[in-house]
Amino acid sequence: MRTHDDKRPHDGARPHDDLRTYWDARHADHDELASGGHIGLDRSGNEIFYAQRLGTLLTLVGDLSSPAAPLFVLDAGCGKGYFARALARCGHRVDAFDASPTAVEHARAEGGGPRYAVAGLDEWRSPWPYDIVVCVDVLFHVLDDQAWAAGLRNMASLIRVAGRLIVTDEDTADRTTRGDYIVHRPIAAYRAELEPLGLRHTLFRPYGFRENRVGFHVFTRTR
Ligand SMILES: C[S@@+](CC[C@H](N)C(=O)[O-])C[C@H]1O[C@@H](n2cnc3c(N)ncnc32)[C@H](O)[C@@H]1O
Image (cartoon, rainbow, N blue to C red):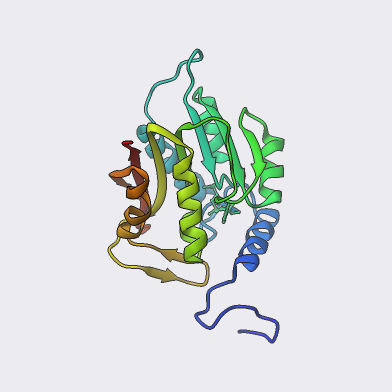
């Protein structure tokens, strides 16, 4: 039910500041898997959900691991750092950031190699380009189209030529809103933002987890 101080616009979506508050509170209230995973799953369900996606993500990142020449990887919207830590364990040099200070504090306390920061998708700057930028289950929580596009363009700007941007969303032709904090965008919307920046859509790999329709979209920088 909406109350007098409910700032939601009439389409029912949460406004931007409300979303930041939502994520910070969720990271404070839930364990390290439920806070960034599927809130409707129990602990063992989230263990499977995370482990399956990690396996798929690693097949997309590849099996190179060289201490002398590590891959430079960015985990954008890292939550409490599950994927960032796993990528660091695989020998990659990992930067990771999230808009939630609570999530980043938790991730830092876990250690494990990644360098963490509090930042938004459109805010993170880096003195070096990345081989791979991953952004897992973040973009479809960015409801504002301009913020979504700005975040996507910023991530694209951080990738070296022949590097890859791996983002997650459904593989859909239509825009679909679910509840008050999810909007799935068509692949055409991603391509419209990324192709002019030199990123080509090269692959979609579905999660394949129960009824979940989300998967990894891989974009490769060609110029
Ligand atoms: C579903 S969680 C996924 C977290 C992590 N990628 C994972 O899979 O464990 C979504 C995350 O996106 C973060 N987030 C939402 N909007 C963001 C934005 N504009 N910039 C950076 N992080 C954002 C939230 O704080 C939250 O940690």
